[in-house]
Image 1 (tube, rainbow, N blue to C red):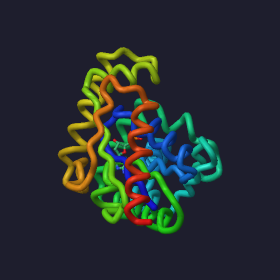
Image 2: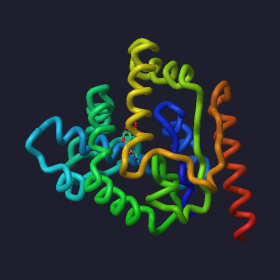
Image 3: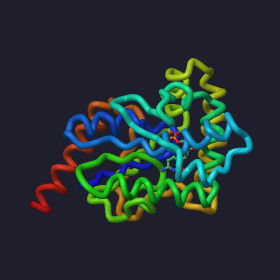
Image 4: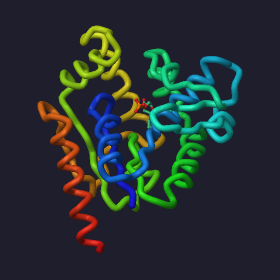
Length: 209
Ligand code: DC
């Protein structure tokens, strides 16, 4: 089974998807980390071929760690510079095609909670459950600021710029799949969001049993 969790920056996708996966015993896939790895490789070598990076870079998830060509890149891919660059490389069609292909292969077998921008629309439109997570701009900026230590105003400006790029790009723009369940996390404790999604999964499992 595949649970697709999509939504904009700071809606809580990572925290929620990780917790839902742990709760259900499913494997968690952070597709944004893959775009971030391609961005980091581009920053480290401006001459790097983006398409080749997307198809050939060795990206492995080991528990909570993200390994890029056998080196731990978990922290390096979370800097504001990499965030901005990732949303840029994500507009490249050849990068998207290569990463989408890898994501399809990875999630072909077993039970997954995959999180990103286009899981329910492009990567796996056949997902048994699609969730579109949202939250108000202010709350998203506050959550990001608590994670990064930057000001709420800086985070707000940053996320609006990235949202705009993610929503308006030609290749697989961020949008809610028609059959996705929208879950607004504004003012809602994460534990409650996780419970809600677990209940949706139980519904699907009940229907398909
Ligand atoms: O979720 P994140 O912030 O780690 O994602 C980093 C960037 O990658 C973000 O700007 C959007 C892009 N992305 C994407 O286009 N498609 C995905 N499935 C996941 C992320």
